[in-house]
Image 1 (cartoon, rainbow, N blue to C red):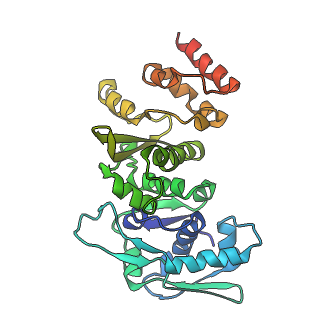
Image 2: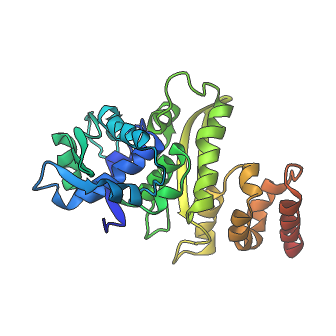
Image 3: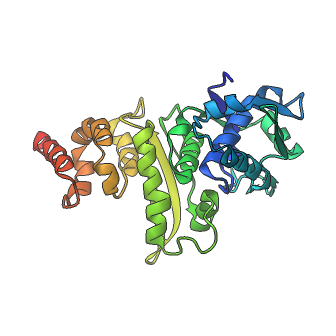
Length: 301
């Protein structure tokens, strides 16, 4: 298979994330393989070895692989949970209508609804099949795809509307009763995915919070390219955007990661007044990370 990316319908990206990480990757590869023939075929084929190669699946546990494929027939997703299509409609579907492996060939099909949606996506994002293999969490993968979808190349940034907490939970596929407390939810489903996306991709991601009293009620996802300023704007015009894109906190796991430190050092030194509040408490940093941050402080002193 020669495809490097898939044109994925925005409503499919913004659907409920009920799949495992492997299943989400599988779905993207299968869609890329079928895309050019969606208008003329009902069934699609890909060699099992090709599918495994694109997924970088090097395990010999083929029962696990088949289980993931079967799961795509039972994984029911709600379409367009954020209402990007701006129509009062509701759709739910399994991701695959059928799948089989015979003679080393994977044969699969989609429901008529999904096939019709995929063949002419009015709104879509180009999802890199190579990049998706870098993520180790289904939450990171889902949030990264959302960032690709909302990112505006012309402006060099993008953001969602305010998403009610229940909407974000549904998008991330968080079942009822899991992570009931916001602190644990925020760490596992917000901060950890952001840290991983910033580590392995060229996106800088932040999430704003809106509260009612002391209770967080809504989130807004913001994304920009690392070390990239919007073009053709005065400094006064872009400062609010730069400020808004800076997270309110940085997990210690990402601070101590030297790759992230190296890629962000130049921008942090240039915009030190904006980043300074994030480094007021250095007690949790490793000795190496502490030395790097102190180096930034010396450069702007």
